[in-house]
Image 1 (cartoon, rainbow, N blue to C red):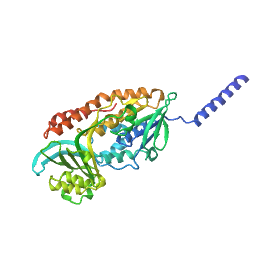
Image 2 (cartoon, one colour):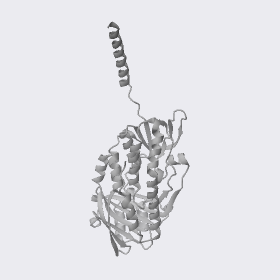
Image 3 (cartoon, rainbow, N blue to C red):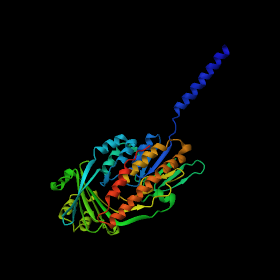
Image 4 (cartoon, helix red, strand yellow):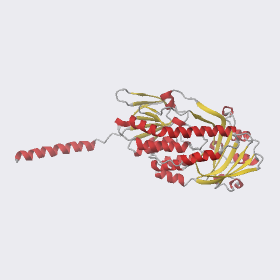
Length: 400
């Protein structure tokens, strides 16, 4: 009996010591480093933080600048974001407008037709704000330019090289857009395809529009002016969040665009449009105007190598032909959230499962988006029914 007592005493003491030591040593989280504070970068940060990873997002920008691009917000994007962050979805839904018609004029202001086209519209700015609300400020690190990475063959740790410092991480994710530096390091420099067309976008708070006549009917309607020449148009609409936005496209060499005044440049480009277009451009501050080429890349054959991967535009930048870019990015993130768990032994395997799950769907959307952009450049009156039928099927997607 005496020896039995001594045995239990020693057993309990050892158990207490082991449990106490475990309590004092917290489980080390796996580190994820994301390059790019884009929509895909921010939403990936939210998703993987929820999955138990230690996440840090790096961006070369000195500050996160608001962007006013109008974005179609479809059910596939909405259902994906619900999985990532229901709070962010709620904020975006409150800043989304349901559009029902597009009223189309020629550049002499003659009515051509009224299209019944229902979809939800928000802005990059509203999405950006909603995602940032879900991210602690110490997760985002600005003014750090990514240059390269290397992998330790023994530990598989990734050494991430910035211009000003190096860090170690377990997973490196390139969410740095169509000109992705992470993609260049993975697979070499990839050609960006330009479609001989530029896109001009601007945003202004509805309350700051001085000419109130410009606001008539625009809560549910969009107004467009199109030229005889295919691919050229200018659209003005309300986009949610109490903002107004214009979007212009023009068969125009983006390299010719001067930098002294974007507003003056756009007025010159659309000089032969009705005077109301000039008035609309005048309402928008030069700093709230974004000019870029319409372009894409051939979708990458693979989106990862070991524990380094691409997501969103870095992997499959597509034209705005279908308005699917942000929605597909949310799909990417929702599925990554499903597959990628904080188990170091299965990271590469699970990234591969995620990529396999995504690629065929994204490839089809990417291809049809490119097809519609080329079609728009050639034909003033394209068969929108064909593309709407395709979109009707695309938006039925639900994440796993």
